[in-house]
Image 1 (cartoon, rainbow, N blue to C red):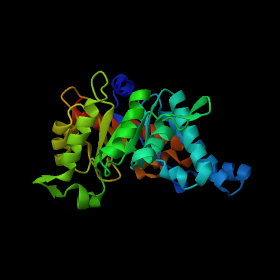
Image 2 (image 1 turned 90 degrees about the vertical axis):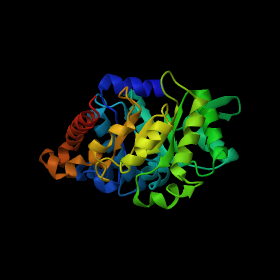
Image 3 (image 1 turned 180 degrees about the vertical axis):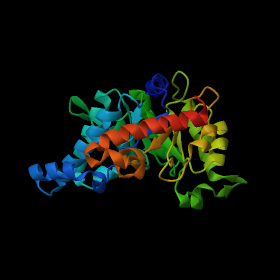
Image 4 (image 1 turned 135 degrees about the horizontal axis):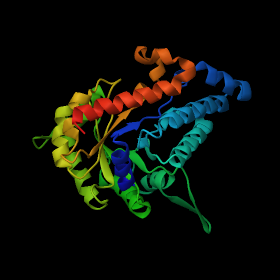
Length: 307
C-alpha cells in the first residue's frame, strides 16, 4: 500500500490527506434535517447524517487527493451506528481509489494487539471462512508499550501488504511532557524514531517502508531531525492549519526527492464552509467549499516544498 500511496501523491501532485473527522455540529443543518426525518433524532440518524456528509466531501475531492484519514473516535461516539458509518466511509473511499489511513491510535500487547491488527488490517477466521472487517490500508499506532505492541501489527501488515504510522512526535502542546523527556542525553522521540526506522527495515516497499511515523507540523525543528533519523519512513504530518502548523515549516519533513511526507488537514477541509474565507459557498454547497480548500492547501504545500 505504500507504493499505491506514493503513486497517488505523484499522480495528483498532492502530498496531502483529508482527515474525515466529523463532529455532528460540522454537519450542515439540511443534512441533519434529512437524516432525522428518516431515522429520528437517534444514533442511527446521527450516523446517517455523518455518512452523507462524508460521502459528499469524498465525491467533491477524490480526484484531487491520494488519501483520506477517518478518525475512529468521531464515529465510536455514536456507538455501533457510528462504526457502521466508519465502515461505509472506508469502503466508499476505496471504491473511489483512495488510500485509507485509519486513525485508531491503538497500543497494547500480545493477543490484544493482534486482535486490533486483525480487526483493522487483517482477516478474522470464523470456522472455515475468513472475513475482512474495517479493512483500512494503514492505521496509526501508539508505540508506548514497545516492540511487544508493534510486532503483531507488523506481522499482519506483512501478510496483507499494509502499513502503519507510528506516533513519534505528536502535534499537541503537552506532547513534550513525555515525548521530549531526555533519556541518556537524548529526547525520547528520537529514540522512538530510531525504532520506527528499525521496524521499517523489516517491511519495505519499492522506495519507502510500509512503517511510517506521525510527526506534528507544529514542531518543525524536531521534524527536521526525525527526517534524518527515518530516511525511508513516510511521515504523516498532522497539525497543519487549524492547529497552527504552517506550510513554510514543512519543507524539512520531505526528502530531496520531494517525497517522504503527507500532510493532514481535517476540519480545515471538511468544515471549510464555516470559515470566513469560504463562507460565500454557503452550507448548501459545503462540499464545494471543501474542494476549494483542498485546492488551496495543495498550492500552499507545494509552494512551500517547491514541488
